[in-house]
Length: 568
Image (cartoon, rainbow, N blue to C red; front, side):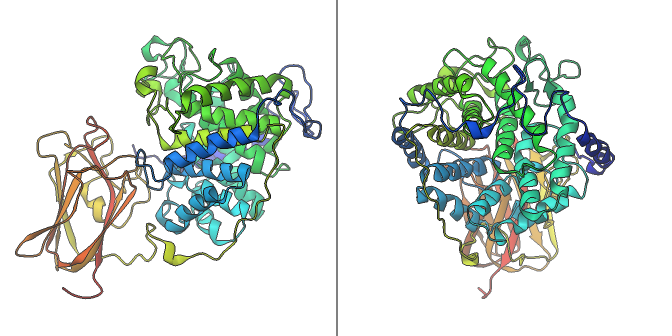
């Protein structure tokens, strides 16, 4: 459905005007009031964490390295550049901060270089999933400031802020863009980023925050008074999705760490952080970690790591910063850590019990079926949690971090579309795919229109029929046949595509990419190079995705064609 973000603009002034009023009558300017007894926590008095004597930093680092080593070069999850893999690399960055091991830093830095430090390929979007990579750029900048690292983050957020409101209509999006807003205001001095973000946060908080459990409904469809699809999923008493809550809790944690504490929004976020911490403590399983549904402990009960990893990260950070009382919360994180390392991380380092991508608890089947299931963001969140737990160990000694601060290496860019020098001649796309009626503006012409900025605003092609015999065919005819040597496919993330791309030169067909016989990595951008070919027609034939047999839609954000510098 196409959203009109301009319609949100009138809300911004209203919500910003709420900043002067405290959320709670007991809120204090110089600290945060305990939700238990009114005690103001003082970080200066929280330098030691009793009860951590039996946990050695060296042992925790061993788990971090085991997990990170297992997933280095692993083909089990997406190798593209989107919110899924960005979360993995945020885990790398947290591991580097905790251990000083430069290989973690280098992996995160290299992926940023490969994509040219671009957010959403350098194009504007109000769809916040598309800007989640900005979080990695901000954290790399924080370690070694250099303007090129956040230049495109500013471009992306300037566009979002021009609408006066962020679309946080599902709580995952707090995470996708929240830290970037707060951090940019801190390092640039421009308050608009934080103000727009804070206004948006408060607006949606009024709608999605559950005042009973101090946790969050994922969106309006989960709220009992207004919901339809998920509010009574499987007749659950209440549906407070674990991963949706972890996205909120992680972004609140990041603000505790990295935003300007003089920002008017900081005490508000801090209070919500304390409330969520109490709510999460009360929602634990007996083994110390969390189910996929925090609102009903009998609904889809089972270990789940994509929520748990983020909760461990936040709770440990709160203890370290003196926001959460060690006497109460150290036993909480210890029990979670014991179950994570003793049960959820295999001996080889694989993180199991990860719910697959979804927008609700629905894709969590059974604990037994998912015990070996892994996803990139679940691994990243686990690394974040382990890294913060390590810092609480009594024998922990913080490393001296000295990452290199080099100029941008343009030659390292392999995936970002930087030059824009793709073919712009007259093309005639056609397809036998069925129309995706929920997005009527996403016709086949969008596959070659040179724009891929937002899948919500009619910029991509989406058509059905992958599960029928023969799949889906998309052809592009050229009015004046060019000589090509490269095709770049900008794909919808998180799927392993099964397709064949052929070029007709006027006398014969030539296959330039075929992923129908052997599974290809899950990528966001597929760059296909070949010897120069005269091109009258390009034909893409697609079947079911490798990693799912039920999803029937071909979803392409853009096909870019590049002319050869030298002829056939």
